[in-house]
Image (cartoon, rainbow, N blue to C red; front, top):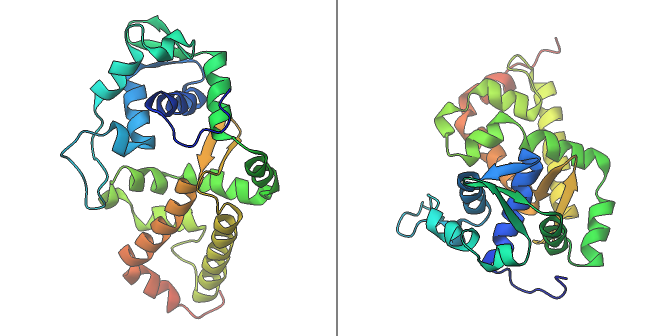
Length: 230
């Protein structure tokens, strides 16, 4: 049904976004929610032109780019991928769900990578990407991230000593490196527990770690100074 697709169309991107949203909402979702989800996943496609951040990412969603596709009798509804069930409320059909899964798992090589990822790595990704630090960082709420948040993200305590700190942080970074190396394909995705993950999110974990190390350098130095083995 979606064999040999080299480039995702706008319809494809909306279906993928609806699929991800469906995994969160479990049933129906609003058109506004789909606008935001599509922008989160494909900001350069569904972002509002003229408002980009320092990295070139369009900072705000453009609702018209999504509405023009899902409203009326457009291709996305003619093909039976999306169903309108109320005022500004939609539902991904079984056909749409199958199509999204096909887009996200296009070849056997990708499926092999999915099955080869160790369970402990999947558990780590699941925990870290659902952590409040991850959400705050993604939403650019940097000032709201506390040192306590950072400690729970790493799995340490603000009262840890130097020995505990080095062991836990080195283990954190080693596992993260192994995870990244295990999913080196940019198109890699996997589904676990009703939630869709991708390589971009995993790479963001390393970026967050680097940010926390810089942001809380003074607090980290205090921990490093505790050489006692309490």
